[in-house]
Amino acid sequence: MSHNQFSLLKEKRFLPFFITQALGALNDNVFKNALIILVSFTTATRLGLDAGLLVNLAAILFILPFFLFSATSGQLADKYEKSRSIRYIKFAEIIIMAGAITGFYLDNVYLLLGILFLMGFQSALFGPLKYGLLPQHLHTEELIGGNALVESGTFLAILLGTILGGVFIAMGADGMNYLYASLLTFAVAGFLASRKIPNTPAVNPELKINWNPVTETIRNFKFMATNKTVFLAILGISWFWFYGAVYLAQIPNYTKSTLAGDESVAILFLTAFSVGIGIGSIFCEKLSAGRVEVGLVPVGAIGLSVFGYDLYLTNSASELTPTFNYVQFFWLDGSWRVLIDATLIGISGGLFTVPLYALVQQVGDKKHMSRLFAGLNIMNAFFMVISGIFAIALLQAGLTIPQIFLTTAIINIFVAIYIFFKAPLFIVRFITWLLVNTIYRIKNNNLNLIPKHGGCVLVCNHVSFIDALIIAGYCKRNIRFVMYHKIFKAPLIGPFFKMAKAIPIAPALENKKLMQSAFDKIAQELENGEVVCVFPEGQLTADGNVGEFKKGIEKIIQRTPVPVIPMALKGLWGSWFSRYNGKAMSGMPRKFMARVNIIAGNPVPPEEVSADMLYKKVSALKAD
Figure 1 (cartoon, rainbow, N blue to C red):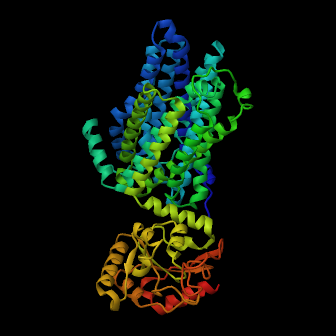
Figure 2: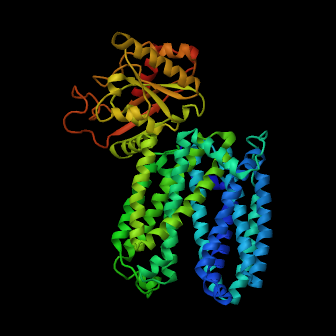
């Protein structure tokens, strides 16, 4: 049965946490934007200070705690029960917001900058708890949906907080009263919501805390590097923070000098970007069919470059005078294209980051989870600082803001190529996702019968060269496929099987050494708790019927006793990838958009497994 991500909002294991983190993001941004506007337009002038200097100092003070405290906060999050830690942090937020109200009332910019540092400190503590908690309360198939809700909720809270902070300051004295009430109300509401977060046990209570942030950060990064997939996922997330920081930092000047718009146009552009991220995040659940679908990451990467480039093409003007408000802006040529590009960049960002967050939570070491996200926080902060230096350098070199967008979109292509080259899994899943969502209309039945954890073997009839890709596209667990070595080496699709680390096998008469190596590798994968898929016919069907099952499946189960799940593929016979006309992948493609069914049967205990019995079960599933 398919899972609806929005049903998580009805469950105690998720809803209180969701409300807590969303209110925290909302409050952070109400305060930050109110402070930045106040400093930029009144306080700096009154004190005779440079507004740009104060704004940049504020940015540094907020980011600095991530460098100083993330390594320690990650250890604390792994060592102690998380819901209680979150309550402490949210209670501290009430005190911090009381200090913020005092600073605004006294018009003391130095106190307010100190409060901003404390808010960064609080965020540095909360981040590892936030992402470490999710995999403890959500099932694997819920990780995409849970992260999607968190990301969309966070960005929409950031948007609303940014708008409210600006509106309150613009209202004058009355607005300040609304600001005080909002800061305190959101902080108290967040604390009350945190009290409902379920108990979240420590994942590593025996951990000894290393209080030295430098050595712990180095140790954390060394640990991240031991798992290439996790490290590249973290690198991808941090790159998006770089990309997003470049765009967001330029929005005020972009809307003034390129779009000739006032502050309301800047808010409109930010709204389009933030709503896009929310939409992209929510789409992830629908497009991934409940699994951690990293095949969406290349889709997002492509979108970030394509729509970033189109934003440059849409309007490359510079040094214009801000003339139009948001209503007038709508009637200008190209205005809708700008907003659509901003929305599509946001959607692409959601598709890019949500699967990466879920991937880290799925494959990362559970006893090291919060420390992984602490390392991610440090890397994110570093990339954001570098993004500022990058933008300043390009501006000093004479580039316009549209040219900065273009340069960032081009660099994104090379970063994506690097990540995908180092982790071919992303491209394999991308090709698989495209295949199962465009060429065929696929329906699956009873795939929930595949165990969620532990080693097992799938046995399926072999109809076409792309059977493995289709099965991989719809099973929620990662699968190691065993396939005839000539299919493994087939043109066009062979390289994808190699990147997917399929296991090639040959009959003893053809290559006894390869056969033995395959059986050894299968045993190793099953012992490691992985899913292995075998096509016991040993070759593609020549007539569409299920062929005799070879005895190799019995040998596999005798060596490593695990459950066997019979499966059947229906609807692929007659496709271009089948041997319908004697030779597969020849002539014109046929049976485009065919209806394909994947059907799973009840698991067979290892002691009952025989090749003949599995043949009958698969044949029966195909006949149904």
